[in-house]
Structure formats: structure tokens, C-alpha cells
Length: 83
Image (cartoon, rainbow, N blue to C red; front, side, top):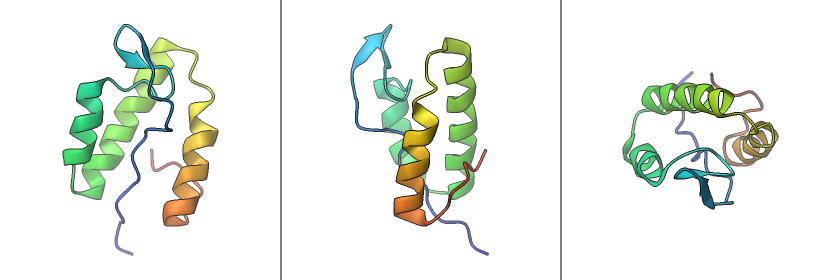
């Protein structure tokens, strides 16, 4: 089965209040631009792994997983994080 592109990890909160990190997804503005430039699904999956690790290190991002899974299901039909 061919891998499909993943939707952005952004969950449309976009408030950069945690030392330059979004309170919704933990990405910085630079990371958001970087994700958009990743064309191969393998690279996008690796980025998601990094992001989940970053969220774990920073704490207080338990809201992201359910929000992203909802977005992932709507856009790709997948119901499991590819990490």
C-alpha cells in the first residue's frame, strides 16, 4: 500500500506563547514552514515522531493527539498516528 501525505500537525490554535512554541501543537513557526516543505510521507512521519517527542518533553500537550487523530481520519481515513 502506498503511503499518503499527512495533514499538517497544526490543530488551528496558532498561539506562540511557550517560548516561541504554539500552545496547540508545540511547533515553532520555523517547524511549521519545515513541515510544509516535506514532500515524502516518510519524512512527514519522522517529523511527527520528533514532534510527539518534543510535546512529551515540554508537557501539557495531551489535547493534541485526539485533535490530530480527528483531523487525520477526516483527511486520510487513518485512525492511528503513524509514529
